[in-house]
Amino acid sequence: MLKLKLLSCWFACSVFTIFSINSTFAKDIEQEKIVKIAAGSVLEGYYFIGLRLCRYITESNDGIRCEVVPTTGSLENIDLLRKGEVDFAFTQAELAVDAYKGKGYFNNAKPFSDIIQLLRLHDEAFTVIAKDKDKILVFGDLDGRKISNGPKNSDSTVAYNLLASHYKFKKQPEDIEIPHEEYANQFCSGKVDAIILMTGHPNSLVNHITHSCESDFVSIEKDKIDLLVSQNQAFKRYIIDEKGYPGINKSENTFSVAAIFITTNSVPKELISNLMHYLRKRMDQFKLSYPLLYDLENDHFTSGFVLPGFEHK
Image 1 (cartoon, rainbow, N blue to C red):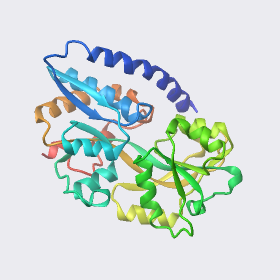
Image 2 (image 1 turned 90 degrees about the vertical axis):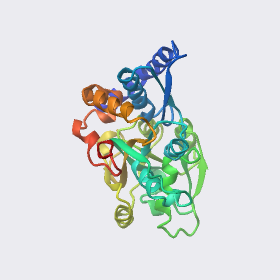
Image 3 (image 1 turned 120 degrees about the vertical axis):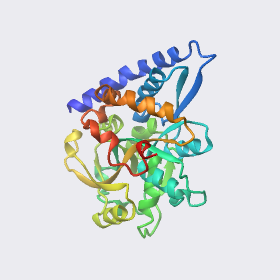
């Protein structure tokens, strides 16, 4: 509960920070080079972590201005990075691996072998929420139901499609696009039977939903989790802890993937080196940029990589 309260407090403070930092960036920019970070929704963690990293980029490199670019999620971020329209990006690890190898969602594109991983961040869990009364206990119970993975091409859509491919539904669930800010209203009013997110826990949006109407987490069947983990090096088993949310009385099994921060060989090595050197000296400060980073050990961020790291180049 303490972390959840801190999350709410942090979010309110961060809204002010966005405008303060962007206002600072707007000054004296004519002779500065612009570096861009592809993030996600301005309401989600990637964006706020990006703001902190942008500050570090400008502070560690002379004549550089940095911007955080709002996006729909990992797929768009990787696409922008491949096209050279941004210099850095946040993404879920399994999608970065697929892009690097030219498989999965990227099997029609050349392997993106230029990717460099700079950081490993928090874990994001595949999270399914259903109402108590609907008796949706496991993922297979979504047969024929109305669900929402949020906006088009969201990170949860990617994970959902991969997981659902291992089920033989009599009637495929109907996926309805709903903005995340409308999740609680549409879900609790019965417009959809289940909502799905890829998110770290505890999460303020999940907390809002579970407070708006009686709901529970939905478990993913163990054999399907084992299958996903065995097929993708970036996935791992995860338990959503009931203690993180009042009203939820049972922990549930699912899978998760690390959020990572990436760049490419096209970005000047001096710029990257300056950033990473600067960041290492301020890791405790960096962890304050987002509550889900608070409890991670400092060496977590530069270990357990799924892609080549900068030091190996």
